[in-house]
Length: 292
Ligand code: AMP
Image 1 (spheres, rainbow, N blue to C red):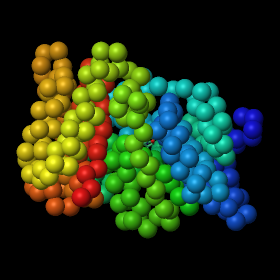
Image 2 (image 1 turned 90 degrees about the horizontal axis):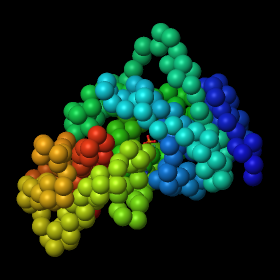
Image 3 (image 1 turned 45 degrees about the horizontal axis):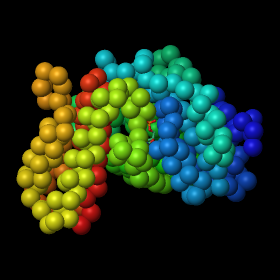
Image 4 (image 1 turned 60 degrees about the horizontal axis):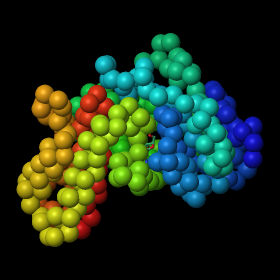
């Protein structure tokens, strides 16, 4: 299949007619929203979309409204040609690559108030982030009125936020989640990993190691959340997640209810360990589901 066979859609109108035409022909359509700089984690979601539906469309859009001021919007990696090649070689049917002005024309001023599950954790550290995420995801669902949308559990809270928004607003789309894809050294794949120097990457490995250590304590029967959280932080500290002045660079390292993300005191239900930490100038997030 040549690259010309994957449809490249630039405008919301083109995107919408692509999906409606396929659905009129009796085909189902899955959508995989991304910000580009694609890696195998993103591509695993495309594979899930292919399994779920007759057609899969990816979107590539670096959404300005989900970046808070002083974040890396301008530096965010943009590798469009490579991304298109990777999508095409995977057999992706279409890709929606709108310009910023197509998604946010002058005067565009409506935004979504995200659901309650957005308020904690990332929501506290990145005010307005989930408002921007919900707004763009709802807009993408309007442009591509798909049957299925695939999101990664790498951004665990984002997945919970999207599921809640879809339920709260009766959106006619099935949300499917993909597991975290990791590099062989254990680091969760992320477009932002390319910011890391070799030394920083070594420090960053403290994050998956801390989660692995947590899982082994749970396997040995530990259920006390306060103790598990203390140990989680200790593994991060011991693994070198602190900046050169020794300043704490962990935004959070918590174990919370897997659905609501509310705090729990005992491991008596499905939970998730969530970590956000800065390594040098790069902010990384990772998580691990703890199913009983
Ligand atoms: P992004 O381009 O970072 O906005 O991510 C687009 C989608 O890919 C989101 O649903 C992410 O959760 C998902 N994703 C990012 N990294 C990974 C990964 N390592 N494994 C699985 N899914 C991922």
